[in-house]
Amino acid sequence: MLKKLKTPLEKKALYIQLAIATILLPIVYYLGIAFMDNIVDVNGHGIDGIGAALAAALIFNIVIRISIVIYAIMVLKIIISILHYKEISNALIIVPFMPIIITLLFSIYNNSRYESQLNKERAAYTVESYVSEVKERKKQDIHNVDGQMSVYAYTYISTFVASDNYWLSTRLQLKQSERKAIIDEAIPILMKDLESENLCYCKHFDSADHYYPTTIEYWEYHPESDTLVVKFANKEDPKEFKIEYFDIAGTG
Image (cartoon, rainbow, N blue to C red; front, side, top):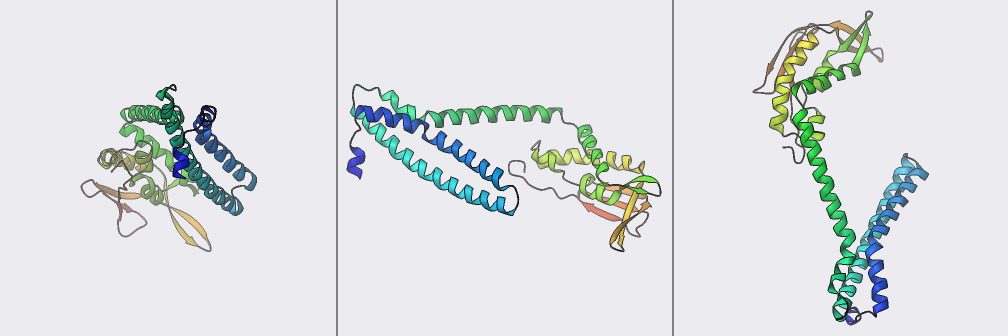
């Protein structure tokens, strides 16, 4: 096997193998993607679709690994053959690597564009931007209480106001210290805004949720401990909301 590998190809076979090696991985990859997309289209997104997609992914990974092994053997054979023929330029050795080189350059270019766009978004993003986005979340949990549209205060505060909201980490990829700086300024603004809203709380009985009006008697935010304390009129004791900053790779 090793002796056969070291034997140079004939010139015609060399050029044919050079062409095949150059297009092998891109063709296998894109045919595999098309195959997986077709599997999803045919089987849908239910249990059957998930099973089919997993099976397709397994087959795809096996085919890719086999293709890489075949590619490596072909490239090695090509290099040995090119070096054997003195009249053939050694520069041809780079040809089978062109798809990999182009893919790497394209990836570097895309990452550079993404980082540039991300830096622009970060520079333009302010506390006011954050406050505006959080306020929009009030619409997600509004209930008609005694003829008035009221915000379910507990959910809104715990989920959005006193929270390390995901878009600061995932979209803007801000570090924890940067997220905290924004949240520390935003919470007092958001709580003062909430004071002007009709608020409600929830009781669950008779297999249903029932909403009743409430107000905020007072609130206190302690940035040193990342804690928001809120006293609701319907509760005897104040509620403490602790902001837990989660770590996402690259944003810690």
